[in-house]
Image 1 (cartoon, rainbow, N blue to C red):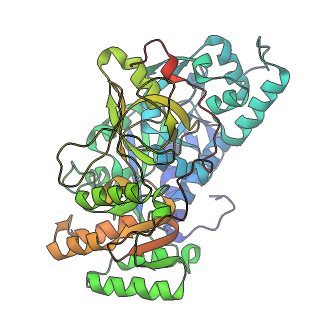
Image 2 (image 1 turned 180 degrees about the horizontal axis):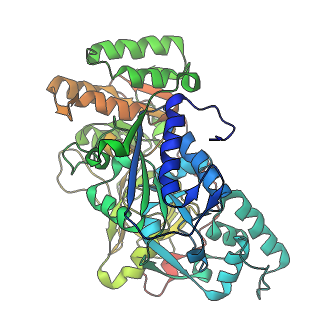
Image 3 (image 1 turned 135 degrees about the vertical axis):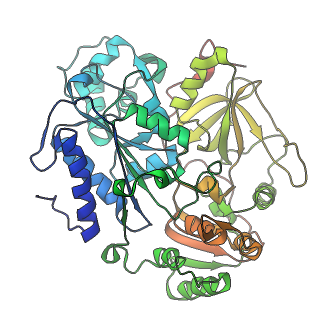
Length: 511
């Protein structure tokens, strides 16, 4: 067959052929660039597994390009054409906003699993713009929108294929064109799921119900979901439905971070041997740092990764103390982690609005300041297409040796947040940051306890996940110390336009 103009490794080429064979059985021929109408039949599930540096993301991206070239329509989760039934479709999914944004930065048009399960309902007037942007209709004449505004929308859509972001570029707010949200009732077609090691059985069942053709991309060396006894969903697949990719040395040569991650596969490697490797790499390459203290400046945008919850709480308290943050309020620029939504069933639409804007459990957020109403916060949702939002908030600041968290301010109900200056390695899965600080004393504690997960020493799994969160630089922090900040917290580096969807002004907003 004719592969795209990229030189694949042997196992990448085999994986391509395996997926192409699966798609051919579903009526899509990547070699010929053709697709036939979907037919009812037995669902297909395949898993492509590989550790960091094995080329999973490159393969996923190239498969998407070839599917689009064959006439398969991309479903992003932010708008679906009523003409979709006439076409074959593909959706690229990730479990979290941050994981989806990592893919989008690499040119893969990903969305979250949640955005696929819940779909937006558009005002019919603005559906005409969406259909035009997608090439399904003529350029519309919309009252109140100038030709320049429509041209801005068109240009924006060509850049990122997001209908809401394109409409925002035309000067519209989300509440102008989205009238509500509904749970998906009809299945889709092809689903590519990245970071599949994070899926639990319930999510997997939902995805199999939605996608008759499902390909999972996952890393078997990561940590399994906490509720699954060390197992990942692809562990239960037949051997014939699984394939493991191996490290592509020509692509990640001279990468000390990946060298360290892959060294952990050595069954003879002990913790102290591994630390000597880290120290040696730090002497040879500035992409690895042997840290004598936690750098507080980095904590505002990339949390310190720890194993123990008690360590997380102590580091958060230290971060707030060096910034002289008062107990009764947050400072603009403080990082938060969404811990879920506390809303009753009668506010289901409100819940869907918040979740659609990225405020789902695990979302990383930066506090921008108080909202116009008591208990509301202006927030920047990291990785969201429209990052700035105002929402009713319940912020919990945990303290060492105290069971109940301190709540500096709160609405009666809304989105709940924990502080995000430090997070556990389990919760960091799916995320990546330019600089990552790993708190080594916690991993030493795990090594000393001798705990094993799925046949692998727990400290090695923790170290692997933590190390592979770093895109550019790894800081291996060996002492329980905190540096002083070089300046105050800031928000001017975040970018993004002000929140087009003023959630606090909707009539059913909780107060």
